[in-house]
Image (spheres, rainbow, N blue to C red):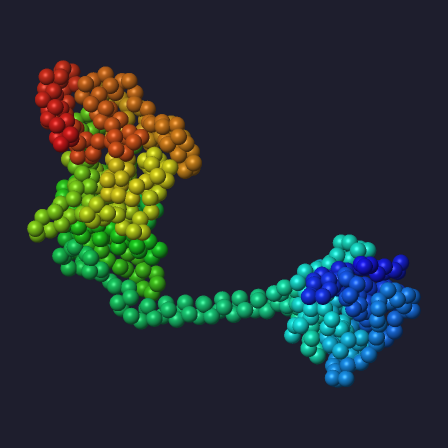
Length: 566
């Protein structure tokens, strides 16, 4: 027969757990009386042949006799002492008696009047904010599954009177084991609160910070004391000239990795360009030297000539210099922003750009040397320098990669470069990590540079419009990556090719070439080598726009197309 213990003055009835053994179903509960401060433990009969045991445990030395009739429902009630645990003691606390102090609380409490031979300790508490507040501690019968060395509460029970208050209960079977108590894996005690834990954590973090600073200072001193840590000159330098006195003069431009200066070198005051990298961008400085170390780049007329590399400064404040030839016309972007060009100049610049890029893309395998494919990955008009004869050379290899035997390095990142020059597959994050895929990305960017040339070309004596960047009309000067992605990849828009550019058959070929180079599908784009051959055919025919070039262009264009198809 099952029953519950209820009493009008009870402020809470807390169900802890239920379990069964071979003979009986047991229901373990305790009730707390606000008036009489009694703790009652009840075992309830499940079967007629089960022996019922009840016991009352006093929290303040006595229990109100109003509870006695309830014991009549039990078949037996005994109040006996354990002969083996006369010295068993527990930490004692009563929130009403102690009033927040331990002056009126005997510590410890001797467990002398328990109704079972197995003895233990218990604790009851709740939380006020983040602070654990003990309500009761004392002796407990080890009748319910309390075979623990520590006082651990698995989960809270809700006070039935207040309902919003969670009350925790735990019990254990070692003397004074309720001095500290736990909720799950988080431990609390009356002398060590959460605030104490937080303070300890802050102190540990502060100590870690100062240790780290000390180690960093030690490391910097070690680097300064070893000449090999920051070399004055990398072994990758291709220059066979002795290190000369270089004097920086005018600042030419500023980029993401540093500044470019006009400078003089040596006793003869040779004018050179010096690209100065900060210490944070030393990896790009090394990367450019590794690219320039590839066989053939030093002597190719359409690749910026590399002269040397040096490190200047003291301590950790090194500046890293890259020394190259100087071209007074500056970058293609800066020139056409101010000056218009003729169609013949357009062809000269376009052919030399495409030849330089084609040489980078080419893989050369021979018995005495090997040149891997090189992809630029940041091709734009700012990274093309204009020579006095209106040919051009490719520069700035800080993001370039060597693709040896068609493979890219393992740590390659696909979405790099200047966003308005990014190909659709780069913007969509769908780049294949292969030499072919990266070559086609460069092809797309080269098409935009050719479009810039066309936009500033004087056709039939008419002055072109004011210079604008690719997609400046569509998205403005400072578009976000999302805007560029939506325009180029989703809407598949391209810079406008005006009808007036297609009136002449020569310029019409250039426009068609541009459209084939910026195709949305990488596999459909023609190579830079094919584009170079096509523009070169126009260049050799001449730029007489008043004549009908069909007969002159036909055999050259057919030969060029056969070369591309092969």
